[in-house]
Amino acid sequence: MCSNGEGGAIEALTSALDALAAEDLAPLFGPALLERLGPLLVAQNRIAAEVARTVRECEVSGAAEHDGLKTMGSWLRGHGHLSDAQAARVVRAGRALVHLPGMAAAFAAGAVTGEQAAVLGQVAEPAAL
Image (cartoon, rainbow, N blue to C red; front, side):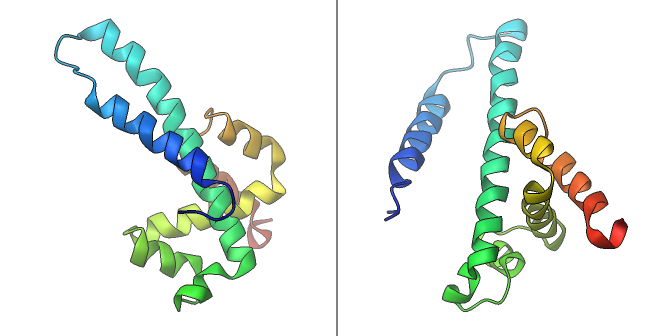
């Protein structure tokens, strides 16, 4: 359980996901399934934005060190079971959010995918400029 007050929001999200998973999709077809899918994709992007934002704060605060690891990339690989490339993309996207507020807002709204945010982050890295 989170001690920072975020537990309620995470619990609500988990409950909503449980309710979605319990829905019977068998009676649905074509248009009804697509109507369901659109908001799910937006939600997926919004969750990816929150993950990237949280990873960035973890990185800034040195949170991985509390778990015996040196970087958030290594934490994501070990605890999140992400590949090296996926972990790097999440870290890169989180770093980019700080410097690209317009992209951060679009990402938080679900209009940008995690992969798109990571690409923008890579382009915006100081070495690339």
